[in-house]
Length: 111
Image (cartoon, rainbow, N blue to C red):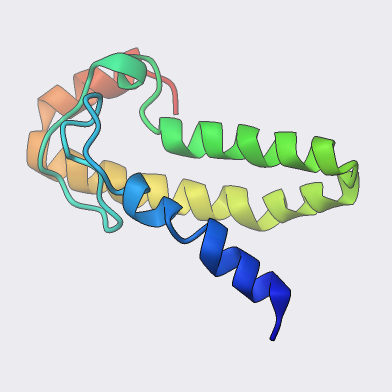
C-alpha cells in the first residue's frame, strides 16, 4: 500500500468539506464555479476582492520557505496566470449581475 496516498486521504481530504462550509464573511457566497449570488463587501472583502487567491499564494510561499526549496517558487509561473484568468472570469460574472455596484466596489479594493 502506498503510504503517501493513504496519508493524503486520511489527513487532507476531511479539509475539503470544511472549506465549503458557510462562513460569516461570505454569507454562503463561496462557490467552485464563477457565479454571482451576493456581492460581499465586508470583512476582508472590503479591502481585497480576491482574498482567497492572495492568501493562498502567501500560504504556498510560507510552505516553500519552510521546506527550504526556493526553486518551488516556479509553481507561481503557472499559478498566478491561472488565478488572474479565474479572477477576470469572476469579475465579468459579478459585473453582469451587479453592474454599477460592482464597479464602485472595484474602485475601492485591490485585486
